[in-house]
Amino acid sequence: MFEVWLDDVMAYQSSVLRGSDVAEYVQVNIPSSAQELKLVVSDAGDGVGSDHGSWGGR
Image 1 (spheres, one colour):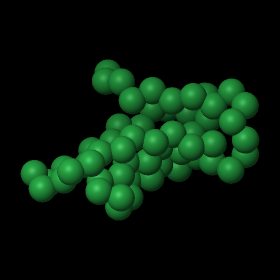
Image 2 (image 1 turned 120 degrees about the vertical axis):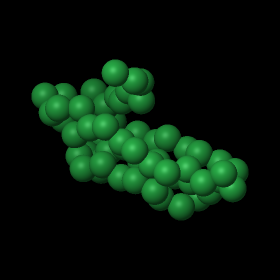
Image 3 (image 1 turned 90 degrees about the vertical axis):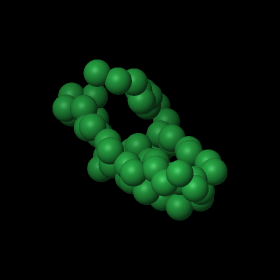
Image 4 (image 1 turned 90 degrees about the horizontal axis):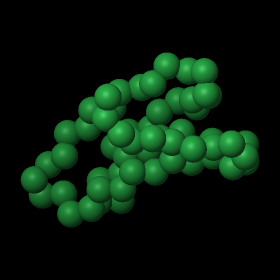
């Protein structure tokens, strides 16, 4: 799962994605007052084997 955090508040969380799934595009409004942006990829609770993520553009 992909998560976007702004100042310790989750702004976005994807569904569980598998290797054959279509990429999801994420759009989050970042206020000018934001101090910290965290991009997180988690194991979705099923272990880290084969888990990876890409935050790159198109």
